[in-house]
Structures are given as structure tokens and as C-alpha cells.
Image (cartoon, rainbow, N blue to C red; front, side, top):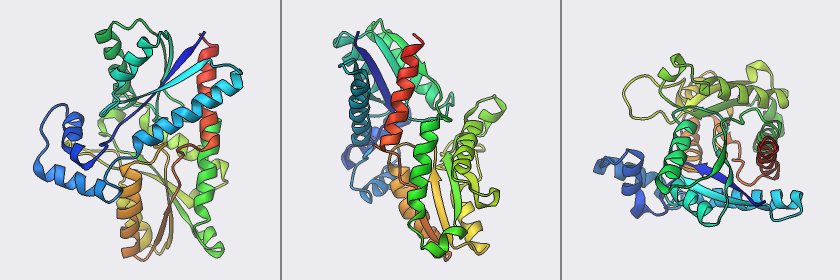
Length: 310
């Protein structure tokens, strides 16, 4: 029996001309201000005029499908991609799965740590698409995979690669900043596991690399515009604090992301690197997992485990 795998990611504009419509989708149908469109367009213009996220997610899907079918020694799996805020939307992926006659689906969000505001929202989109389309699918939802051993190994491998960006004599002085995408701080009081899971991911990667307790710390990036407190401390503040304390070698590891997009390519690689340089520090970033063979093996193992529990 052939099974479907659905990889769900955030989405991003495929061209600068799409930025306004993309923001309207992110904002739930509200029209973004011209200033907001201009600001976001400028960020995408600096990284090639479009988001690379769809291309990368599709490459991950292709690599995962090849891996799964090679292990099964049969064409048992088809891997689909659905985006929350841009094409192909999750509902389009659900329609394709139903059209292809597949019923069993393993669905996972390309965000390892669970929050009802992130992964939970993807699942709501998936369930709404099923209802709207009348798609009778048997769906296994993967809520969290933040501590999967192969995910931790893949991140440790890439963090070790990033350390090579520093001179040999500098490496013992490198300060590692693990980070995740910020969400409203109110989720903590609601019992949301997001913060705890991100910190566990960071701790496990640090442990895998035998990092001393004073060699790393955890923070957040990308706080939104919504009023109220957001999870912190903020990455920019941590960079400045470390640099002002005399630390000249900083390595940022965004363990909440598994693919390059504007928050890695612009926010960290351009803005944070410039900020560090302004304060006399050299900043490197852990390469995103993208199609890392170890990461693809992690995804495959997650899918296989889900299948075995059907």
C-alpha cells in the first residue's frame, strides 16, 4: 500500500511582487501598510528577491522520498509539500493527495518543537482542508521531534562545520548562541511546551559536542509586532552583551529552523553579523540543515516509526 507524507512549512514570497499578498495572508487577510511592504521587500531583495524556502522544502521532500523508497525497496511513499502562508498551500497538497488516491498520510511540520501557535496552527489548516475538500484521509500527526537523536546529530555536525569558520586558535573561545523564533510569552503560562522543547534541543546539541556550560546560551529572534511580552532574551541584545564583555568569536545556531529562509539569510547573516562587527566581534552561523543526509535520515526514521504504529 502506498503512503503519503506531508511536509508542512511556513511559506514565503516567490518574487518581490508577491510580498504584499504574502503579508496579507500572514496577517489573516488584513492589508499590510505600505511601510511594512517596503520594509519586508527590502529584506527579500537582499537575499535574491524571493524566499528560498519552497525550493529547499521541495528538495527535502525529494530526498526524503528517495530515502524512504530505497529503504523499503519499493515505491511505497510519495512525499508532498504544503505551505501555511503561500503556494502550494496545505489545502492544495491535501487535494493532490486525495486526487492521487492515497489515504494513509504521515504529516509533520518542518518545525521540530511544538507550540499550539505554530505546529498547532499547521494542523488546524490541515484539518480544515480535509473538511473543506471532503478528503477521507487517515492522518498521523507528528507533533514534536525536537529530541530525535538523528536531528541532534545533524545539528551537531553542522555546528561543528560552522566552528571551522574560526581560526584554530580562536575556536576554544567561541561563544555559541542557540536560538529559536520568538512567540508571545503568554504561552508559558498556558503550559505550552515550546520554550522547554527548544531549550532541550539546544542542551542536547551542546551535550553532543561536549560544550562547557559557560560556552553557550539560549535566546530568541524575530519577535513579532503584536503588543505584549515576547519570549526572550533577544538575539541582538545577547550579541551586543557578549561583544561588550570582550567576547570576539560568536557562533549563532538557530535550532528552531531546519531550512534557510529570511530569518537566517537576512536577520542573522546580514543584520546580526553587521551588529557583531560594529561591536568588534566575528559572527558565524550554523548552516541550516536543508538536505543534510543525517537530517533526511532523521525525517525518514520519524516517518517509519509513525508507520509502524498504525
